[in-house]
Length: 635
Image (cartoon, rainbow, N blue to C red; front, side):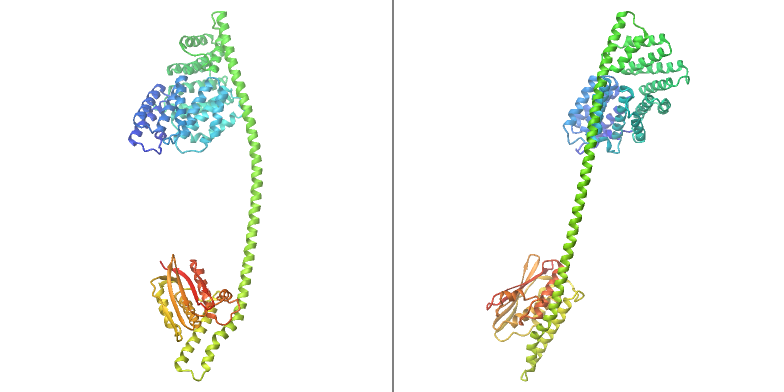
């Protein structure tokens, strides 16, 4: 199976062909990690050298090569070199290079190898602390969807199972929970044949330690099925492990298989381990075979396999695997193979020394478990306390939000009520002022029309002004009710409005001039309403200017156009300016519907364009008036 993650991608620009070559070497090394550890080491060294020479930024590739080598050295029981490679991985991960994308997963994998080494050396508390830290890191809780993650998770479960069934003798109260958890994840942990067989063996051993030999045999059968697939799946290591596990499960079922057959399975597994060459597995095979031989009273066979190991063990270092070695001296003593009493005494001393070492390790592990359990209980208490506080805080926040929303709703309702009251006041004021304004606006024209000496030309002009006054009243009425005059927005030249107004206003009286500046700006709004607005402003200016001039101009002001109507008339007081465009104020007569209509027109533009349209006046008694009107520019 292709381990695609061996070609880990990263953010550094790396030659894809060179990376592919390095990934190929790492992949081949990974495939051989169980089958041929020496080949795995050689291929990983080539990959590491190639990366150092040609791809110095390919950190993921270097981590994969070093972790491959560390595992292969572990398989060979070469602890010194395994630890050396793990230290190199530690250093590389500590640098946190930008070319490292899978550093967290490689960190887990390298720590799992270190945990295995500690287990073999009898430091089960230190091993468990590593496994505990991996669990607390939550790296394995976020599935990356690739095989490197599956491999890391599979190795984590295998290492946990080995710790429980071999180094704690299956005494962990949660061992069944762990086995069931692994089985639930089984379908998601596919990596390659070798990893499948390793996990099957760990599950078989776990169930065997839990007293369920039939379930153990089921997992052995799965391994036999894989081994039958052919050379690509065959591995001496896994075959020997499966044979030994089968013998152990059958031993737990007295009478199911003849003792000689079980002994034959143990011995076959032992010889395969000798062919494989790992001293740890060789010793394990020797102990298992000799122990069963003694169980069935075949002392000669026990002596044979023990003598063969003693002749080959050579450089096996004391305390390389205390638990295994204690089992070895236990079998030696029970086999009565000692040639002298002094030799038996030495064996017993070694056994006692190893036993003391293991007891001390188990004590440290027990203390650690108690410490972690206490920490977990405190953590749970703190978590529950934090949850209660959080819930109370959330409730308080929710209450605060509800109160705030209620306050906003009440404030909005109050504002709406005030606006409705103002509208009512304005409507009443409109009715009250309508008659007053009409009287002041219409009375002068009626007086003119009653004059028998009025010339036909002047009569026509007065009638035109009277009609425009009534038109203002009609438009103001429309604009001051919700369903009134429709706002038709468009872009148009301001000069066209100036031209229309010039033809619609009354002629200036003698001594007064009216001037319209030529403008280039285009504005956005309702052309008819703006014409009405400007016409009323100009008409009002002419009415209040006895001599001098009235001028109409415009200039751009950012995104707006400011129109000004200036006169040299009588001007007005501050109080008059404040009430000039308001229908809810008492009008003094000289300003009527025209200016009130102007206020509604400019408000309509501002409501519908949201561009900051406004109308204001600058005036001083005796010095004239300037009315400013800002409307939106058409871009």
